[in-house]
Length: 169
Image (cartoon, rainbow, N blue to C red):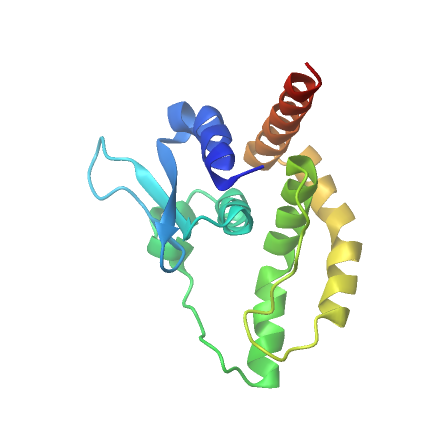
């Protein structure tokens, strides 16, 4: 699945209900809430990377209604290099997002690669935590009143299924 297909699925799912655009080509990811009434919210992902599109969508799906009124969901980015303590805080903040990204990658038929966002960091422990936490994320998706993540996953699966049927002919 390409990033443009992900953009199309996102638009199909969320344009009418949330007036939010997923936009590629950015040097850095960024969520920009609408500045004025009638303008869309914009969720930018890096260059044309499908993984970045899914990662930023996961951030958006995890963010509650208050966070979606704030630039970058109100988070302050701690750039690398990070101390061991700061890297542990990064992993803690990213656990739910990357577990959800993993769910989205599976739905889209893409390989999930976890990110430490810092060169030279061992990802083995984080991978194990993600694998364990993914079942909690699935439970959250099923029980949450906010169905954006569940809706997006199902739309990705439908898209991939339709693509496969079309390829078979």
